[in-house]
Image (cartoon, rainbow, N blue to C red):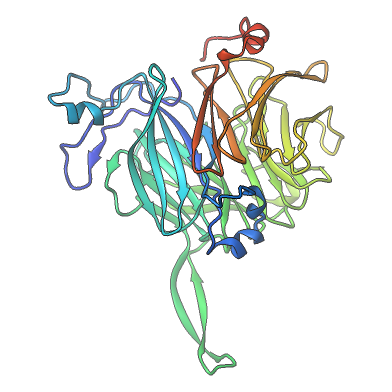
Length: 435
């Protein structure tokens, strides 16, 4: 499975909509598109560098696979009564792909279905968004109740985080919004043109600028971390809709955040200030973080699921660096020149120790054989995905040789790596049962 999110899909206001069948699988894609209207704003966050495609088409990126849901009492199976119902039905062998998209006149979150057996991809339903999506994070937990769910947190150019119920088809509003503006007020002072200045009245604990990265805590499922262009990292208790910690250890925009799967409150963060930090989120104090200087603009950072003390970071120069979290301030113990251009993202395959997949604006993905113990990395194979500049790539946690990528040509690319004999030869004997 890719992500088994087992919930009943229902029409807004109608409990008789389609249903999700047990074992439904999901991956996530976020948007990093460039539109004519947003070029100046995008350049602030350096996202405009990602789209060099001459066609000027929008794009998709930030693909993330998450853990599955095993036992959902709301899931109902059974035969369908009509061809239309059958098309709407999501079966246990299907994979859900969440796609954040931006077109000239609208932004949306698409729920796409990928049929692995037939290699078919189609849009199941979409959710209209009010702002440009920058980050997506899927959650299997209901935000308010102690039960399973099927939700997606979305960060946008607005200083707020929206949480959407993916099992509601035709939803018009998010389930809840973290942070953001309460209301706009006019100050008593007047500007040069004699108009009263507008003041922003933020919700308590809100970010003050765009939300660039999100990560759900895999252990404490109601806690969400967010990184922002306001240079801060925040930890949210979604069940209370409250910010419970603010970290200001970065001096520039926070590009990437990720919780550790081994240490419940260890939070990895990477910023445009070219530093990496590991913070104990319980402390709520930036002085408690440990730091590494990268000396290159950071694209993203992740913990290595097969080697928990290790984490890696990709850079604008096309490098991937590995660090040991137990040795703060040290030089990387492994350096990989992954691409000649920006290494926009990378993904570990947790079912195959040593497999690393990287992506770049050079339009290719590459597969590496990494030995952390020996500090070595060898290029196994790679290919162009034919989707333009690639913004993000992610490996399925349950189908070990399936990856997904989002690119500048407004297309999601799916690749079964088993088509390459070189990849099967190196990694075929390493596949382990996903716990």
